[in-house]
Length: 177
Image (cartoon, rainbow, N blue to C red; front, top):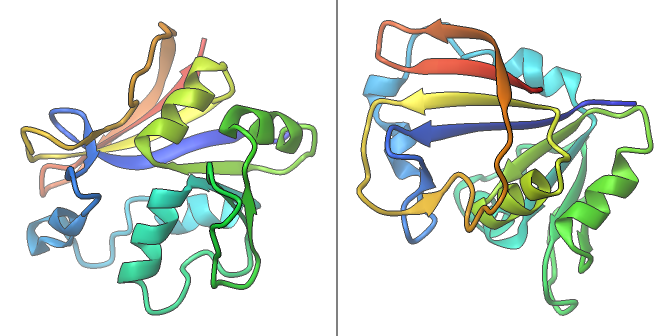
């Protein structure tokens, strides 16, 4: 069986985006280091499928000139069957995120949960995340979209390692106990 990973940036106060979905704060030059991708390329090369909610897909489509996950199977979760996606290789599912993920996990493929908060919460509550790679950004937003929107499940996680960077970012890898 492949591995399901939630890989994301998160603020010190637990948000993955501003209330309007913007992640522009991540573009601050303070958070960029020469020749450092925070492990992104190695992680990206290890995954086969990306899974995200529609709002996350919409946000990514707005700030990227080229779809950043081309070549990977992409599944967008939406409550509306009327949603159209304009990128090649992207499929829309109206099934619940946890149901889609259960089916995907039957393969030997590695799956990246991109977000957003509602998708993260539903797959977390279903116990379907094998590991989390969280990169903490040294900023507080005060409000926004939380890492897990309306999460009602307690789970324990084991620290598999952490890295700190000279610009204040801290990345932690956690595995489900």
